[in-house]
Image (cartoon, rainbow over all chains, first blue to last red; front, side):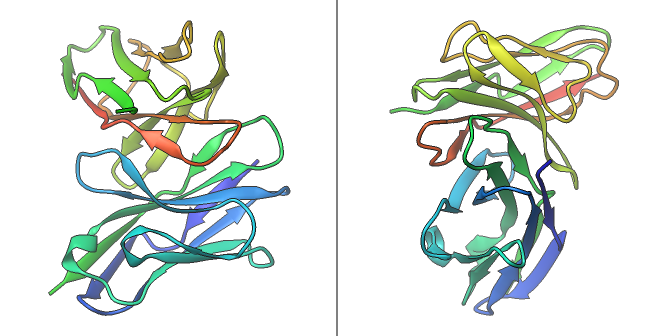
Amino acid sequence: AQSVTQLDSQVPVFEEAPVELRCNYSSSVSVYLFWYVQYPNQGLQLLLKYLSGSTLVKGINGFEAEFNKSQTSFHLRKPSVHISDTAEYFCAVVKGGGSNYKLTFGKGTLLTVNP
Amino acid sequence: DGGITQSPKYLFRKEGQNVTLSCEQNLNHDAMYWYRQDPGQGLRLIYYSQIVNDFQKGDIAEGYSVSREKKESFPLTVTSAQKNPTAFYLCASINGGALTEAFFGQGTRLTVV
């Protein structure tokens, strides 16, 4: 069974500092990976996705993530954060190569950007 | 514009009553999902459906039921058997063939008193 582990439940950081939100997955087969952002009382918005190809994926709002198959990780990074990046971030996985589209999420990381 | 619509945004029910949450999409997506979100728990999968007239239990299906009679609709019923139904519920859909991304509704906050 596939699963997703987000290693930090909360990450506080100062404005303009770099940030990394960590995500590890477990699956015995190929996977598709996603990062989503959620602002309070709203649905989720896609930041970026890895389906295949280049392991460095660039997304919206200056975020990027690197797929590392050997470490089964898909960490999210941003070189300089803004106050407006304060939100909850979710990593998600779908098992690839088949017809089962079970979409599994991690427990989320609350990013708080302080002035 | 294409998207997913969840209704209502806020819902209040008395304990012991069944309640149905609506989810409609006009994206022509094959797969649809229901998640429950509680603080610190992330999104937990309740049910998902990959085609019309078929659906699978997720990780926390007990006390919930769904139907998928039409491609665009995937209603969720929270039954009286659900022990702790107060939560934020999110519906999503995905184009299974292209598997690009999951689109989410704005959620329904259910409060049972």
